[in-house]
Image 1 (tube, rainbow, N blue to C red):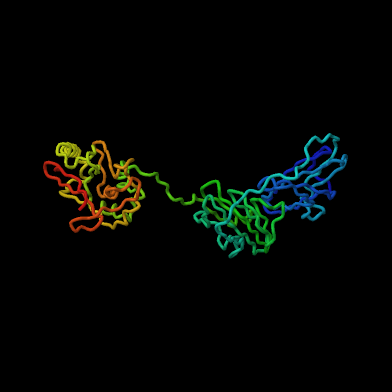
Image 2: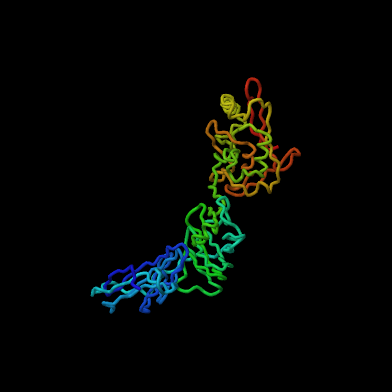
Length: 424
């Protein structure tokens, strides 16, 4: 039979890329003179090292990069054959390509290196999933189900590696093709992988075979499919999808400044203001006036308690900004009280400034008002060093230990002067 496809070549090395784009048929490529080909690549690029092969089987969507050396073959015709075909009249796919060595040239190409590309590290699998490429109720299925665009059968996290097991209990070959990334072969039928099949993206799974691969999920978030690349099988429903998502991470919060902590806590954005936090629960159930936490040290410019003139000025500012004083209209009196044990407060971040006099001290600009219930958590005990875990202050007057609060009243003429209570 005369091969219809042919090409004239020189007596030198050539690199060829073989790609099976058939809908179903396998090809086993070989040279008619029995000469070996040097395989240097597969579906996922270069191999770790070149492999000499006399035949190469490719199913639909599989690829191979090979180097064929025609040196010393001048005036010869060498045919790339399909060994799976039945040779005889009418077999069009028996002879794939004829190479006619017609030119005597000087080969200035470099020889194939002994090493090409190391295998990438894929990490340790966090989970193993098994996929049966089967036939169910007359349909080609994966794990007994046909394709449903509204169903996701796996949800790997980016930055992790999973081990997937492909099994073929049917009597027909399946070409398992996983979108998104490369996969590293762990074993085929319990045997270690051959050198030419270490890293690929399409897997030839014959009847009764089991192929085990490790898949690192590293690149993109979204929905991706995997399927049998035999066209008739995937069109019949032998396809499903997986969804990659960013792995959940523990939120990282910067150390809060005393000035911002009260506002962030009221908005529920700070780790101290979780739903289970008794302070936040108290402020939600008992709306409290927003008043500024003032310094506790004697002579502190920010301490208005005990100074009638400055305290009056502070309250006059609050009277002119009622929205800063009361969260809602119509409250005659509001009390925010947190009752807890000293251990509940221990370990909270200290807002104290530098130096021995910085225990819980604040210097707020006019109009900077904070949640008193949360502010009480940040009040350092006398003599406590800056930056040390806070301890609840001792109670007096029979009130439970660790009870603090701020009380204010509102009249028809506006809010009356009020001051922060140290402890109750």
